[in-house]
Each structure stands twice: as C-alpha cells, then as structure tokens.
Image (cartoon, rainbow, N blue to C red; front, side):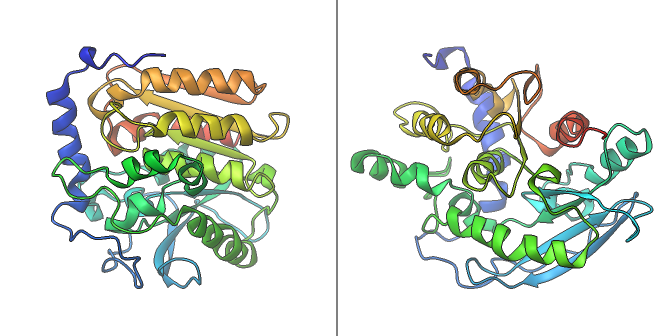
Length: 330
C-alpha cells in the first residue's frame, strides 16, 4: 500500500516529534553500549487504587539494572491467583507527578475500575522502566534488523532524531532485553507473587516502539506470553516513511513468526493525529498479515481512534479496551 505523505500535516507531526523526543533531548550521542543504570531513580509513584511495590536497580546479566514498579490491585491476596501484565515504559504508567511530560496511562485507576465492574479477571501490572536515552536501541526488535540487507542496515543505523542526533545511541539489544524479561524478571515475579505462571495468563503491552518490542516478545517467546497489545505501534522506527526499509521488514517477520492464533491474542490500535498520522496505511498492511496468518475477531483486534494523538493521555483514554481484550473474565 503506498504511503501518501502529502496528506499529512508535516508541521503538526514535527511539533509532536519534538515533544515526544523530549526525554532524549540534550543527551550525548554515540554508540557505546551502556554499562550502568541510565538515569537516577524516580520517586515511587503515588496511586489512587491498589499499591506499588518497587524493585530498585533490579540486576541483570543481560541489560543494565533498572527500576521495576509492581502494581497490586486493591484487595490483593495470596489466597488467590492473578494474571500478569508486563508493561513497557513503566515510569509513565501511574503518576503524572513523576513523569517527564506530566502525563500518565492511569493504569491503576483503569485496571482497578475494570476489576470492580467484573469486566476483567484480576491481574497485576509489572511496569518495567525504560532505558532512557538507550530506549530506542533496547526496544528495537533485533532479528528484524539482522534480516535486512547490508545497505538497508546501514540506512537504519544512519537514522537521526528531529534534532539530527543519532536515533540509536547504543548497539541494538532487544534480544537481551527480552532475555532479561523472560529469564530473570518473570521468574522473580512468579516466585514472589501469587500469580498464574502460564502463557494463557501472561500478557505484554507497550506503545510506540514499546508496542513493537511487545509484539516481538510474543513472537520470540510464544510459550511465555499468550497475548500482546501494541498501541500506536511505531512501524517506521524513524519519524517518516520516506526511503525507509524497516516497516516492510517487520511485516515480513510477522509473516514468518506470528504464533498460533488458536492459542494467542493480539491487540493493535492507532490514532490519526500528530505522530499517529503516519500509522493508518502501515497498520492496514499489518492487518492484512494478521488475516493471512489466520487471525480473526476472536483473537485479534485493531482499533482506530480518530483525532487521537501520540501521547500517554490518549493511551489512557482507551486503555480499558486492550485490558478487556487481554484479560476477559473467565
């Protein structure tokens, strides 16, 4: 499907990009792999529903130590078992008072309300803080890069931010990030909390690049994750689709690696404003792959939100939809 960039308001998108890239603004450039936690810890989020238990500087042999915030719903008890949702960009989920842009997903309020209303089965949220200026590299689905041609790899490596600094400030380590998640963090959660440990009760969610790595996690570890939600998936990797080899490569990886639709569930969505204005034609291509691989209404959902922008505020407004898709009542 052709990408009609002439229909997009490029000035609006550019303004959104400057805001969205705010976390990385002013960060040093380079390609050295990080060897320590990338930033000072944020205060523990204040939540209005349930409670947060923090793992500070959770150590890993695969990636730099990082903070993990575990949200337990009201009435959490060892007398019952809970499903588990692993969420990317964990510092953005619960408390706008601690986030860089003063926005949040309102994950505690939305999840708790759905549980009260009986619209979802009980679950906990494991919010994994991102790697700051190394986020783009850590959330890069590594095998999709490896399968590019050498010239296309060089084009991806040469991609820049809107301020012309390198888009990727470290070597790609998406595979190591998933090893941390699957081999270190999940076993800890399974030991320490009263949770179901099977794939049917374990889901992963993220937005933008966090959406891409979440779907990648499902494809790489289908025996661990039974469902994934990718909100505002940032298919282009960079900030436009011109001369960009990457989206087609990710779609091909999906064709070759999507798990069995009989046992897995996948949720997508997108807005139509700011950065999300890039996504409708690319999501349509992804939807075609989903149909090709046998996914349908019972195990796949794609939502369009007209006028929604690329922001935590927008994702919070529709978070109840993917949560109900991931954890329907039993």
